[in-house]
Length: 354
Image (cartoon, rainbow, N blue to C red):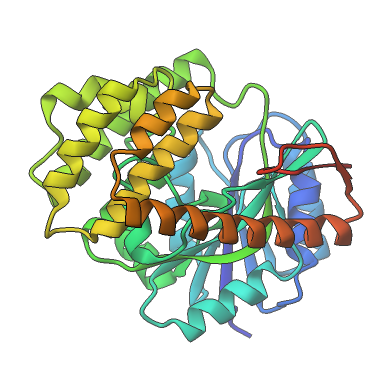
């Protein structure tokens, strides 16, 4: 029987968490899938682990690269080999919750105009679990606006129409931002994207995910991607904001409320009549929320908030509170089901520990 869903994964030296990741696909409530795994020249026991799974389950198909192709090219290879109506992304260190494929499949079947979707998630780091992205909007207009200031779509949670993925593919010239580039290019071409507002994945965080070298490369690649995205939707990214955009908006390493206010004023003017006003305000408000979490002084955060229309401010604060409460409640249910122990955490982001 031809699979309805092709789950694609690329792995390089992923022996530590690979078994848990693959088993989370095997244990899905939805059964009509194939799992295409590209072994990108691993030198650890990844190959042996994959060979064992392939013998155990004929739905698991393993391909080994002759040379190390890196993630974007390996994913394109997996896409070209896929047979399903839909393509689901999965990483070798994350965990799919049992109903992930079933719920994402139903969502896409019931929303035929959506070309790509993702899901809400929980993070895990050093055995500690926490809600991810609680309170965020999930609609297409919000995601299109959010892409102007960040990457709002969880890559390993992506679930898309196969025909769309085969048309767009990943940019193989990129080394660590291939997902952002793909979402931005799809948004530029009016491909509708949404997020299913249910926690369906556990996303693993590592202490050394981003090295200083990788971060510098990310800065360069993100700026290149966003310059193109801004040019496709607006008149481009103003030269005077480029340095602050990378350090103070996208990565928020050097938060500066004065520069933020200048950028926000410029962006609102540039997007007028081109993008949904409320969605643009939401995207800019999200940056302020991140500023608060990054330790920016309360008076500066309030100064930024006062730049918004009072009507929008009240509505957004109420919406965010209601949505965050729903998201955290869903994560609590997941934690209880997985027998994760709830421990002390902030009021906004309760934490669970195994």
